[in-house]
Image (tube, one colour):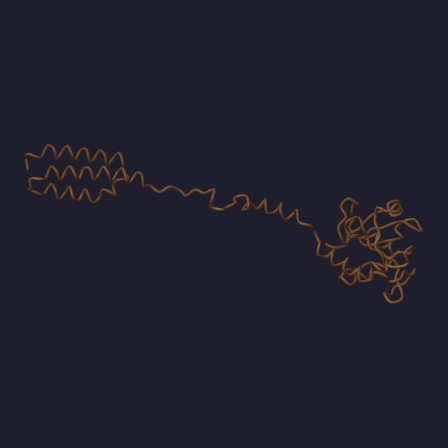
Length: 226
């Protein structure tokens, strides 16, 4: 045993230094250290060879342990995760771009179209005997759960004011005709068209806001759907 004392001490010192420099090998090198203990207590002629194997095992354990240290997982570009889609701000901006009340507006126009051809009668309030422009809009609104006053002027006095450039389907468009102020009204349908009970056509009909007469007599629009 005295023959191998110096080499053993040297090997132990080298092993100790390596272990202190690379602490990650401590766990992986547990088995080789046990082998070292067993080798030191052995009297066989192959002790030097066994000690060399132990040292190599420890060094390999340090190298493998260093290379196998887990790192934080990164988001792969091919993982299909869209980071921007998780942003609340992006979600809010998307929501703001959605058309407001399109379903309600379309429902109003669908109801209004069922009265196409109903005769115009000034002061009329019956879909059977005749309607005028404001009783027509009042009736269609009522069938969609919205209460409006009777005359065009009264309807014009309430609701939210809408610029012509921002018209949406279902908005009411107003005109000054036989007297100053709002005296005629109809439903905006989109594509520059509106449906109304016309004293000229003598029935519920569809006209264009681009027609010269309606362009010159247009005074504003109101929105009543939320």
